[in-house]
Image (cartoon, rainbow, N blue to C red; front, side, top):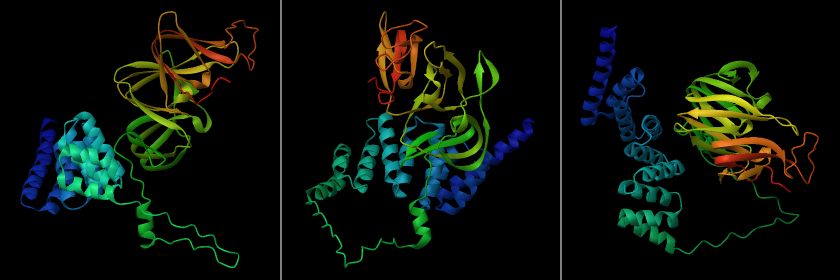
Length: 396
């Protein structure tokens, strides 16, 4: 066994070494061949991914370069240089929104990274946003680009085009047909998922499948790659059950393989949360997806006034995806404080918090019935923070 591993490692290193030599000699195509062979053996090796990105970038294959740098970012999300290189590949490929995002993330990691400042300013400038670009170009000390930016800002805005209303005797304006044929038409509309596991761009939700994760199927309109789907079941007290986690189109499923899922957002707000070892309870309907590394267990809060409140306890290291009507806000509670929210508004909580179902008026009699003046509420007490969806179900 040890000999086989040594052979594989030696073969991999040979491809990487040859690629480095070919890059140094200016043989970009030869370097790409060697690096693709290395990547086939160890797809996540940082050194070969960096070299592959460099070779593809030099060859003008910016999408391939972005793919290599994207995988490198996935492996080392705190590596600033990898994010800057990914942003450069996106920018050279004409995808300025993705470039702006990566340069911004790089500056979050290193606020003094001057190259990232300049590249962010350039990406914004090329996106037609000179006003947003200017402060970054100024910080980076890019005199030439700053002058170009000021020239654009000094130009008077173009007058609005007059609106022409055709008379009854005139034919309606023709719908313009973009040049370039079907290939150009399709290229302009190509959806390229970002390297992150969960991301929303252009009104679409992208979920990358690399191994396994748990995700709902509601809104799913396309699956790319080799991905298998099977219904996920609930877990109670550490044991699997025969009850599906969710139902119908809103059921949770276990996605396994290598590929990407494409969803319509349908007006929902999706929020990515990195648990980073913390734990929390969430209303079951608010959880849209979770990485395989996140542990979950289902539970419920019994109610004498309405249906029980289904919850899911999430813990571990990994990311989850929340689905809400509006971006969640957190409300702190402590001591004898209590917080009451409509069940549909509750997203979840972290800390030592105890929930119970009651009525807005405080009635807890089993015979009490909800009314317009006293609807069903979730009352939360203890010490912690409660996540609330402010637009889900406001109290009239």
